[in-house]
Amino acid sequence: MAELPGIQRETLDVDVVIVGAGPAGLAAAYKLSQLVAAHNASATEKKLEGLSIAVLEKGKEIGSHGISGAVMDPRGIAELMPDYLERGGKGRLLIGGFAVFGVLLILLGFAPSLLPALVLFFCLGAANIVFLVPNITISQEATPPELRARVAGARLALLNITWLPMFAISGALADHVDAGALIAVAGALTLATAVFGAFAPTVRDVP
Image 1: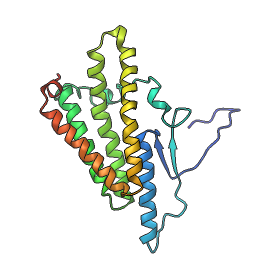
Image 2: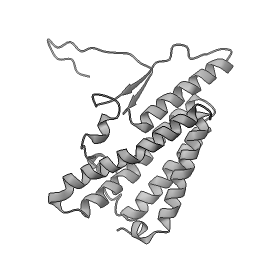
Image 3: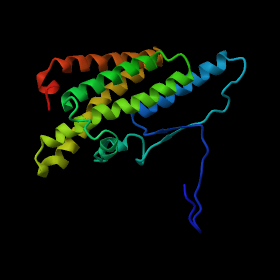
């Protein structure tokens, strides 16, 4: 970062930075800390002592980002792959990205060590973009311009409502079941949802 005259910036050195304190970011930080602990318990040398993990959140508190009203700007992926939405249709792209996300979650649940988990975290971020952009695009295209802000807000509110029971259930199960197994089950459910969508023409055949 460029230095500006007369401006002092506070810095904090960490080993791993996870951007976003949503369910995926918090789960990633938790799983990574588990893998580090398991590595240190079994390694005779090259232990990862004192490894620091930071989670960055733009909201005032964890979860507030979910009702911020922010809309994803697809310009980044559009510059990388200008015709990504036209290659197979938005519906197929959404389903394919969701399926890949589910498979990667299953693999993450069984990640044997730190390095494979880090690779999977990166791939999960890419898969998230692949299905999120067409999802938002489909919604925006089907909504009259004067209602888009209200529809986006309603979608976020409904999404948060569906998260509540999942947080409660997963939190209760985490006291009795290995976190890796829970992540793998979440991946299997995600993959099953994608398979179901592949047989639903209203989703699959969106151009």
